[in-house]
Length: 491
Image (cartoon, rainbow, N blue to C red; front, side):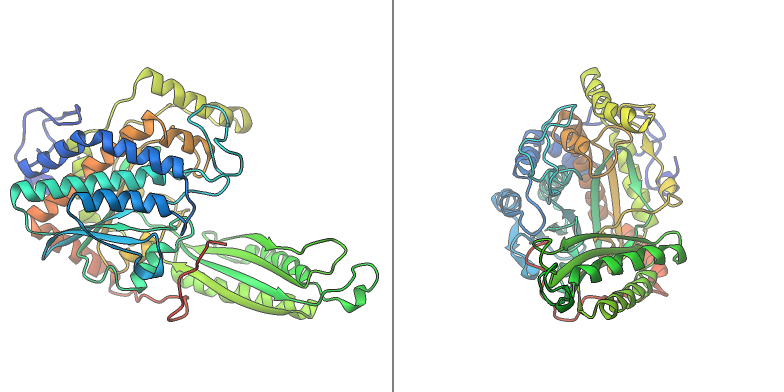
């Protein structure tokens, strides 16, 4: 057991049975009565949690347009007695729901945006529900429903055991474009938060003590002059030429940046017809790195390349930063706490039918890429220490919250083992019983962890001390112009 704190926080126990049906080994800490209340409440609400997951999965709304998904979550919270503020930070689908009063204030994050073009049935072969529609290829239908289940269970425990403090569920839209939490942060929505907890559907169980990549989302627009591409080409100035030359320049830039840097782009407007010199063209870039300072430096370089492309084509260039997110700041005390609960509650077990379905999801990857999958579904719990040395590849706007508040998170097995991110396989899995079991497990772990933070304020101080140490030489800055309104759409 990697957590030292468990040795003195809890007595050694005999094997006990937890509500999930998993056996807890004798050297694992026992859940307190208040934590058991929360875990039991999640179990009693499992039907509701599954129903909410299914509805959000079917809605499959892209970022900043999650109208029905957001309303569904808000409705259940209001019915349970949470105070809900909708449309915060200029985003109609963002909300903050609170229960209780005073300190500590513990927040749980909910996401519910889908990915464009990823519609998929609960099927082992590629089969869209509706061609061209969005789908939950990152599992955010489960993320939102699991966070809801945790918040309601914490509320039940607070009521039963007279726990003091405030539990908040933050409805954060547009995570896939790292927009929601960033603008909510700039709007002051997290200013009085003491601890932030989050989770994400995954192909592994574990607490997260790693980091992530910082990212800036930026659009470059070029303005040229239209002309007949064959009759009067000398009278035209191609904005598309500028975009293409810029992209060539950035691709040569890749040779001379740190290995952790990433630059990827899509052309969002390349002209209307081949016989018209394109007078306008646009390209959308994500620029990433392990350190936000490197993102800032690489953006300046990319901006210089864009200026050069404009000079070469005699067009005009403008740049717009949509959003800017920071790398995650790890918090070891929270990782320890979350891992304790992962182990105390115990991961779900999956049936032969579920294992067979996961193998069907893996098969196209075996055929196309020759990938080997030792497991169909990973039922183990990864030690949080492993995440501290894992290579960082993804980005999340949870990172910006972690620059202001001690933040800890978990992942649970909701997907086939080794399943790649943002794949149709993940849409199928999160809508299946595999996903449902992982969602319920996450709800229980988050609920029990939050209850312990209410029960033991010294743990909040411990997490705060770790955060202050890590932030001592960091200063939060943003590339978003001051006062800029949140984007209305992601593109």
